[in-house]
Image (cartoon, rainbow, N blue to C red; front, top):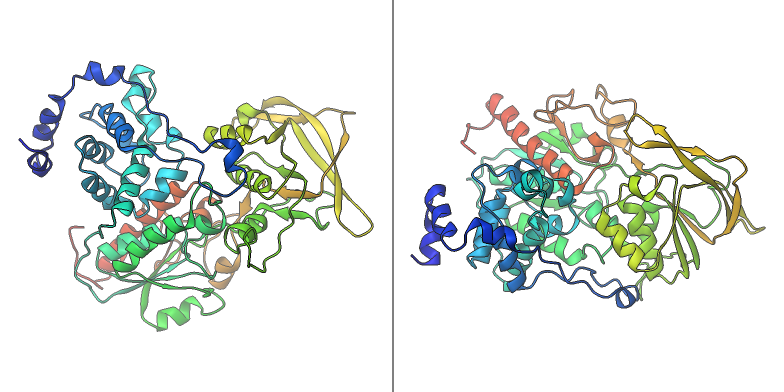
Length: 498
């Protein structure tokens, strides 16, 4: 039977049996996981070139062969957007990369993005049969997802998911980040007329302003957004819902349901002396200037301080993005200041590894007490205090405890605070009666992401207060299904089997 005939088989059992004949399970488990090539550290710190170079065709095919095509694929349960992982991997194994990309797009609007920035090691790969049952290294699901998406894009023949016949019902999406894009994609598939309203001048939300190009090139985000446009999704930029127009204004224009995915763009600070000095940034401001406003490129008017002694406060992925960006902007000493140890650091292990390779200094078990400035109001130093780990706190991590008499001074000319974000209060304040938590997040029914106001649904950081791209996308998909159920129950559209 030819590859084309194999791929045309709809009965999973027969398809699996045909593939299993090519290699025994024992041979698959004996194969080592591939390692994605990387640009050498000494080269990549001189530019914003993408660090991971992607799998070669041979590497991708060999890695796909490691998949056991389990009868009960537990990896799927670990994927917030429900990708049928064995199906797309087996298509890579048989060489039908276009079909692999189509499988991904059935449930994932942003496969090239997710293949790069999702923490697969904590999600799908952590549920891989190798990990759960055999204590072996899992299949490189994220790398294979990236390969399939990249192959399709580079082939020049990008598939567009099928959509239902337009039903004439208008739905608005507030925010063009990962949650909003996922919701828009699913709603478009169901035949809705979808408009995404974005407050900034470019589409993509945190994918554009928050993630550096050396991790996620903007052009890749644009390609996946273009697919949504071809599906009929309309985008309006420089449009602040709640200011440019209210929800009532949009309802009067015919929008019958809304998904709120406005994110959490309000930076948190420590409220210590000196945070108002020049040279002290939030990570949001710093990364937005560089990633979205071209501050690191010639010909752009956006200013950014290129310090020589840069301290980034925090230990998450955004902190790693900030400190590695500072290194690329010319910092001689770029350091992470984190109050816990490396073991408690929430950043992805890969990002920490890359930072170490690039010469980033880690001042773990340290906490800033104050920032000191000169007569011009510019930060010049910071006072740090050493910490030690005590008993676990409510999150399960050991609580950092100050060590008395351990304070000392470090010279800095730039400080980037990256200790988390909070939801922007604009949306909650613009809708009377909307239930909000004490943290400023929107309260929703977790089954369908519906808020206290029936026609408003929400997901992503506006609900979670800060989470991963893929969790936000999972919220968007769940909300799209909830919106469809709501509108169907209101008899606005005929029920479908989607």
